[in-house]
Image 1 (cartoon, helix red, strand yellow):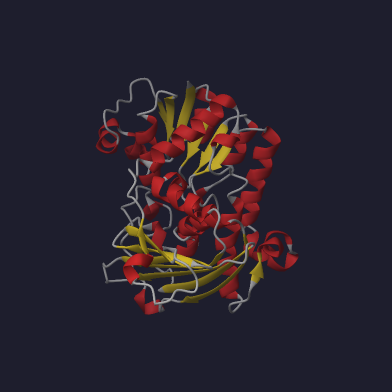
Image 2: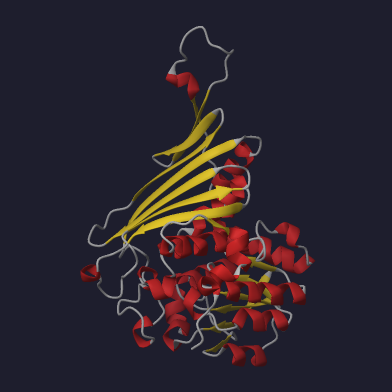
Length: 379
């Protein structure tokens, strides 16, 4: 049984704690959060069923936690702007790491984490739980032998619509309403904070991203409220090594309070689309060329609806198995493999600032030309 700590008891940290509390493979021995209120048993019990603190060590200092209790693994659920060497320290201490995405707003910092992880020979993965959703595994298997050519993903969500946050950003120079996902300095943009999930899913289905190109519709300075200064809308194109073109469109409008989405994946002989949360494939199976135009019903192939399961629970289960067996083959992503998703969304920000320039990720990751976009400011 792995002795596990959770660092950051906000929305995502609580979800991980809830999953760990259900798994016999883990014993939660420490919880760390800079805000004492987030560590109260009464609050934790609101989000984690049948939870009791018992002998679990709680603290507001990561370094204190490392010194106080023996550990095998650490879950990091820290806002991307608040990392300060914790992942590197954990890796150097030989602790296995599950780090929530995005792990940083600066790619050089993420690379530094990766170097420490590789040098320490630990098991490490990023928190892309959507890979563990059974529907997404179903899509992966269906597309495995397809020649993908284009994908389109449109996401409309209100600027204020993200779940309530637990980090006291009002005490840390951030938004008064704690919704740091709407704030550029904290989130890095909606493409970085939220768009990284659909980008990573497309990588799960289609392989590696090799270039990015982006244009954002900036928010007027008169429309900024409670620190919500992220752009109104984003148009980003990702080019894949396979030749796939992926268009990601995101809007984050204030005062709309409305969400919807559209997703499609096109291969050279048909396409998938989501219809009211049902997944439908459209393709022709008859003799070619047909003697008469095929009926639409014959082209429509609904997917069976799987039991979606708990993707966060499945993520933890695979991570803990990998830790127990010291075998990353049980993971659907590793920390290192996830860096391609990370580079893709950070390069989108750079592309926008450079008037929509097409940026190759190999150049973004290493070239001096893009160093100002990768380096974390010295504070």
